[in-house]
Length: 262
Image (cartoon, rainbow, N blue to C red; front, side):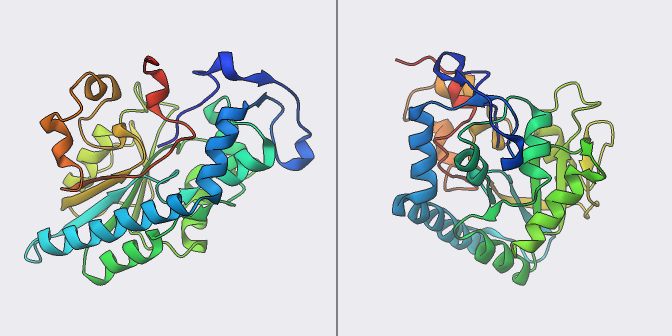
């Protein structure tokens, strides 16, 4: 799940202007601490190992918990769960400061790459007979210069060899709370698509979701950052992880940035 960095960490951001011929918007330069996070994300063996660990563990879980007598599937977030957008942060030395800028400069170029393990995992799910839904807070209502976010997202996923059956995005033009994924989670399970709240590539039959994947605590049904961080470190609420919920590491941005630094 993608969340804007500089709106939250304004004290850590430095204003600067970059040439648009690099494919960057003229805006905000990330500070050294965020640059180190981007470096870890792009250039550490630990990042690769963690992604493979999560998807390998999840595949075992799904194999044991799917019910072949009923339709079933999995739901994955896109940004920093399925596709790696860190190319933009490295190339431009900055992060986007609005959804429109993210859509135009990160999504529409279709340059993001598949993250470690995700191609093997999604294609294995398809071979086992499960549905794969890509569910994201990307703005499905955005279009610019003849291109739109939904089409670019579908094209990027296909080009990277990710196996999927459906893409469900936010509708930031009409939805009152477009960052809340819960209506979309319900739509996937019920086999519907409320066009006033979301943008869907297509609609699948109703099915049970066996596993959810994300890099943000809010990529999971009914979980919210403020509530989860207020719980004790060993609270039972965290027991769902590795048991249907599978979270990936993203040190670059997220809802955690709103938390108090103690």
